[in-house]
Image (cartoon, rainbow, N blue to C red; front, top):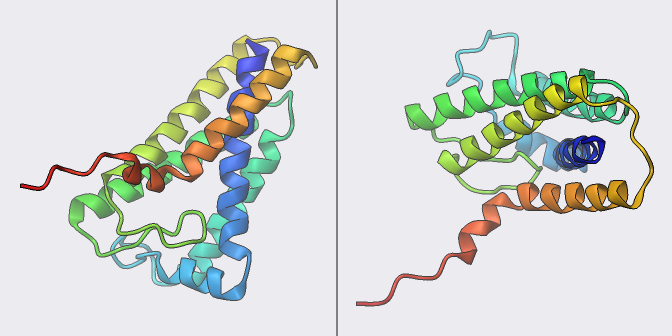
Length: 178
């Protein structure tokens, strides 16, 4: 069980670090990420402009990743569950309302928001909640074993799939020409 918790932890750390760093890798990337946040469509207070919201989002992503790095604490899983709950509900509202917003979750443009972005955020919320539950029932110490190393590799691979979620659309076979 501790190895599975480790895999969940590494998956979330990978996703959150890539998302946070991707938005701040350059001033242009940060500005593009801020400009993509539809503050008006989410009916947020006026003082919470796009740059402030983007700053808070990056801080939340990186702080949550740091909390997840504390191996014996469930607080990282609690924070990630809350963060992805907010993201899932915000994305669902935007997609439902047909808002003209683009996804810059990882600092690059991955297209117009759609149901696949909601599914990705919801899946990450479930990963956080599962980690939270398992962390509280499993022994908090994580043994350094080959199984643990395998779990770490699994977490890295799962994070890679989540980060590249939008590219999976290209794996579908094209419809036959009629």
